[in-house]
Image (cartoon, rainbow, N blue to C red; front, side):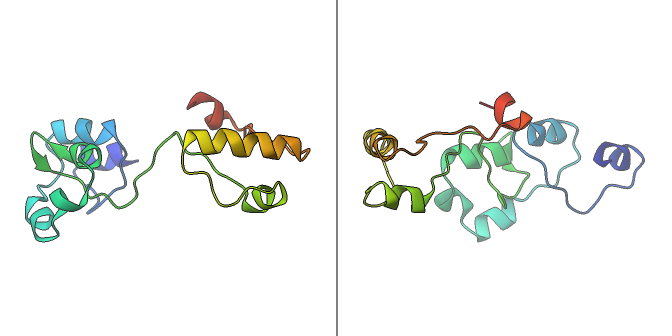
Length: 123
């Protein structure tokens, strides 16, 4: 839909675009320069470099970081951790593996896969 609107000369005022697609749309010359907003809001000092770099094209901000996603998320069930005697959410891999052992020893499942297609294809 976005491509059809842009090609037909009726682009939306804003659109949600992710990652590499930002660079592709910027290369087409259809994204606005947001450097003034970025400067006023101090994006360069607030954003991690990896996020800022994705929002920029040829050194200029062309996208706003309104909803940063990653594909390597891991969710934890606080109730399961508590039941297994884990004190707090693991913050390091060593803590994660120790917690997983406690969860397993409590007869619970320490790691699970959601089973949806997008879970598998983005792992």
